Amino acid sequence: MTSPENLLVCSTAGEVFAINKTDGTRVWNSKLSGVGYGVGALFVFDNKVYVGMNGHLIALNLADGAVIWNNPLSTMWWSEVSVLVTSTNSNSNASSYKPQGSVVLVGSFGKVCGIDPELGGTLWKNELKGAGYELPCLMLDSSAPDAVLVGCGRRLYKINIYNGQAIWKHKLSKAIFAPSCVTMATQQSSLQAAFTYTGFNNNPVAQQHRRHEREKNSGD
Image 1 (tube, helix red, strand yellow):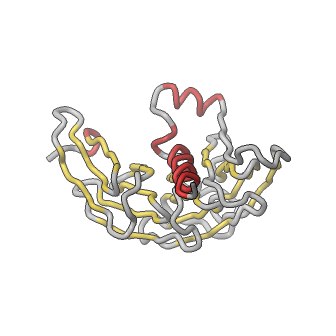
Image 2: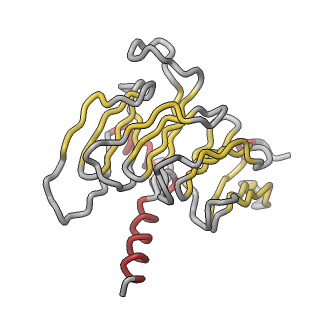
Image 3: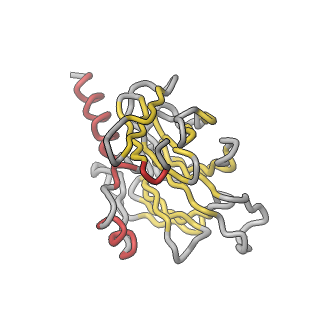
């Protein structure tokens, strides 16, 4: 049996695969039902693989790829999904509600949700007022463990991970015809990225661009 730390989890064509990094053998693959043939945004945390694809968030068992739960992310439609998982701060006084363990943060279709990692239920939803319907970019900041930074629709938001309320928001640009996606970086995030991988793995903005191109070409 391949140990979890030796697994490389991949996604393409509506499936998720676990590959042994040492010898390249396939350990398991999971065909995701009802989500089409997209490329999943992946986040491995503890014993689960969280997959965001076409308006759904799916939790798989890291050991065998079995589906644990599937959240269809109501009102996010058939859109690309950004995924992050964070441990909650039990000492925080920011909210009267404190989920235990971790929170799965999901961004899609101009919205951000907090998801229960065990049962898959939606804990809260922030509609990102004024951000439109683009794919949000999500970033955690170690200096503020109770919050997530969100970029969407030429705007920035800092959101409480316990209750989904906006701590602050900032309009970056008044441009009308320019692209409305937002990228973000801090010194810490840039150093982490330099030693890890490109952001396509958990914030697949490139997929959104391809979808827009397909929609544009289909109208010709």
